[in-house]
Image 1 (cartoon, rainbow, N blue to C red):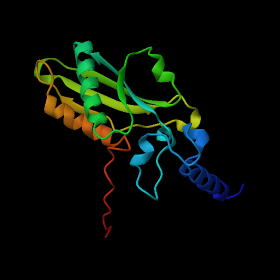
Image 2 (cartoon, one colour; image 1 turned 30 degrees about the vertical axis):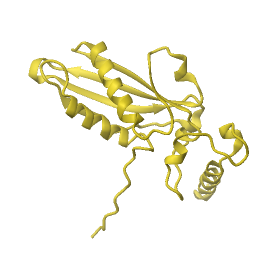
Image 3 (cartoon, rainbow, N blue to C red; image 1 turned 180 degrees about the vertical axis):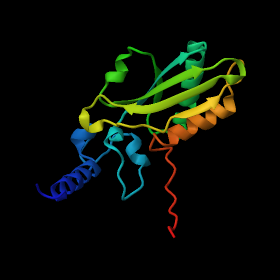
Image 4 (cartoon, helix red, strand yellow; image 1 turned 45 degrees about the vertical axis):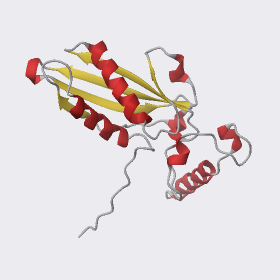
Length: 187
């Protein structure tokens, strides 16, 4: 068995092709790029294939557990839409389960799953966000943002705490909200 050099060469070739702005990938004239999250990437870097040529961001939210799931689902999706749309180079829309937009190959859908456990002042919301795109195995993302949890008040939600948790998860998921890595000296 040979070393990983052929694999490294393949990754480098894919990165070069992805950075080219090929007209076949963006349905534009040669040398033009379709509007999308590609513009949010710093020069000299590349972004995950899932975002290349994306035309729309869908939000698909599901909440289960000991809560009025529909009301909390709507609140989470509306807050996510407002946060994700901030500086977004593509439209951001809320979709429902079964919406055919989830299967559009040029759409990226954030799958948001929340679960509420406990009663009264002990209610906790845990949620995860993972991007999905029906464009082929090359766009698969195995792991999304780190799961988050927050305590919910006895009635309703804690809007400030919810916004902080959602914004942190989106910063790990969306290229236009990603925080630049901070380099630290290792001593």
